[in-house]
Image 1 (cartoon, rainbow, N blue to C red):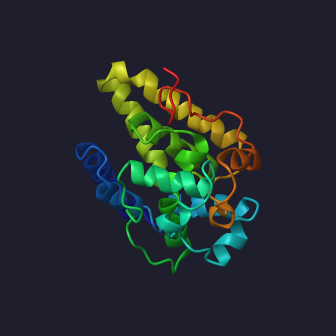
Image 2 (cartoon, rainbow, N blue to C red; image 1 turned 60 degrees about the vertical axis):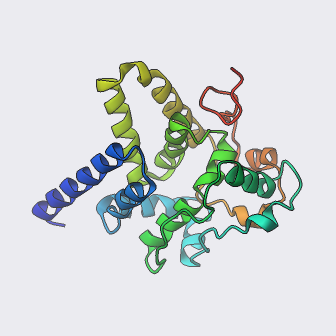
Amino acid sequence: MNRLHESFQVLKQLGKLIAVGKSSGNLEKIADLVDSFLDTPQMNACITRFRKLPGGSEMMDERYPPLQPDLESLAQYPAGSLGHEYAALIRRLNYDPEFFRPRLIDTEGRWLTQRIATTHDIHHLISGFSTEREGENGVLAITASQIGFPAYVCLNQAVQTGNFRFKLESYPAISKAINHGVTIGFTSQAFCTARWEEQWGWSIEQWRHHLHIQYPADQCSYGLHPSV
């Protein structure tokens, strides 16, 4: 990639990042930012890191299917299981289980992007981060730290800089949540290579044990079940 093309690409991505901020995190604007990193050096570096993870290359080469949740079936799993809790979370928040942008999975970058996009809310349950603002940044920090997923790196860098510069009163909570996510990222096994669909019946605690998650965020102020 020549320097001029790279400069245009950076400007384009900056515009999309600004659009995310102006829209207060609109999902379409976030998807635009995510897609702007396809076929870039940053995504190529992310793919390289993913392939180096245990099971990463096999998962990518077989094009393990992006998540396609059936909430009716998942709700039949026992309370406390990943399947049941995922269905309950999506219904409680009145989310569209297929909120993610449809993408082809014909390239490594598109496949990885779609796999991460479709399993995003599972990461909330497993890590314990809420779906509110700080919790979202915390959960993004996990994948950002584990494989350097480009859009998540940019979003968290932008929110930290923006809050530190313009909303200083919000900075401590945002910073703490992101640091918590980075800690989970560096002390646990990779979330992005987990084959969640093969063990819907496992409890959240079983999954945390399997991934060696030592510091879940459930009871933090930015967690799914804050203690205060």
